[in-house]
Length: 300
Image (cartoon, rainbow, N blue to C red; front, side):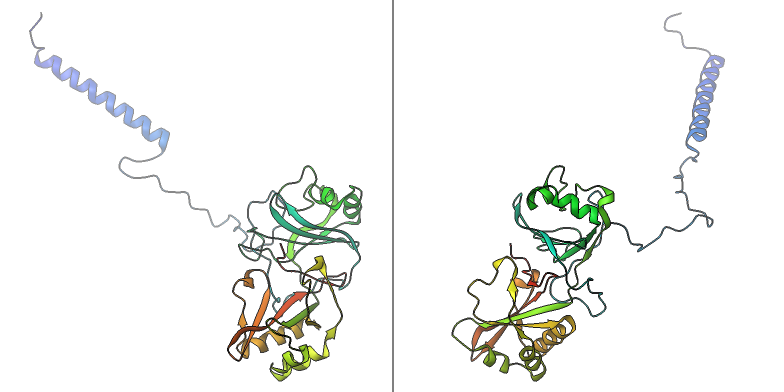
C-alpha cells in the first residue's frame, strides 16, 4: 500500500541481499586480479634459475638498431687503440658533399673498408657536432655492387637509402662487418704555419719543446690534402706515426699551447701565442688516410 513502510523482516532481507552481492563481487575481483584488498600486487622477481641479461656485449650496428654507444673520436686515439689494417689501400669510390643539408665524406677501398665522417649528432659519433672518421667493412661483392651503380652519390645514397648511414641499401651479403667502429690511422700529419706575418716553418718549430721540435723536423714531408683543404696553405706538414703525433700533442699541452675552442669538436688544433699576439701560429693534427692523402676533420 502506498506510503506504508516495509516491515522489519523485509528490511533485513534487503540488507542481507545487498551484503551478499557485495561479497560476491569482491570474491570475483580477488580471483581475477590475484590481489588482496588494500595491498598492491607485488612485481614479479626473476628466479635464480633465470640466466642474467648480458651487459656490455658488443652489438652489430645496423641502421635499424635503436641504441649504440659513441665510438667515434676527434684528434688522436688512445694508446690502446688498434690501427686500421692494412695501413695503405686503393681508393675506388669517393664522395664528398651534402646530402639533405648534411655534409658527408665517404671513402671506399678495394679491400672493402668504407671510411666515412659526417657533421651533426649521430649516435655512434664523437660528439654532437661531428662523428669523426668511422669505419665499416664491405665484402668484395659489396664493393662491386657499389661500383656498379654509377656515380658515387647514387651508389652511396641511392634508393632505398636509410638516413643517416651511407650504403645502407646494401643487403647483408655485401657486408663483412657492418659494425661501426672508429677509423684509427697509423700516421698523422702535423701541419703548421704562421697566421699574421711570414715566419719560416723552421723558426716556428724552434719555439717548441726540444722533443716536439726534433720529431717535427725529422718528419717534414710533401703531402696531398684530401678535398683540397688548406688552399693557400703556406706552411709545412710533418708526417709522424700515431704514437709520435701523440707525443708532440702532449708536448704542446705541457708547453701551454691553447686548444682552438671552436675547432675542438671537429679536430685537434693548437695555437701558439708569441709576444702577446694570440694565434701567432697554428698546429693542426690530421689523420693520413689509407690512400695517402691528409684527411680533413669536419671540413663541411
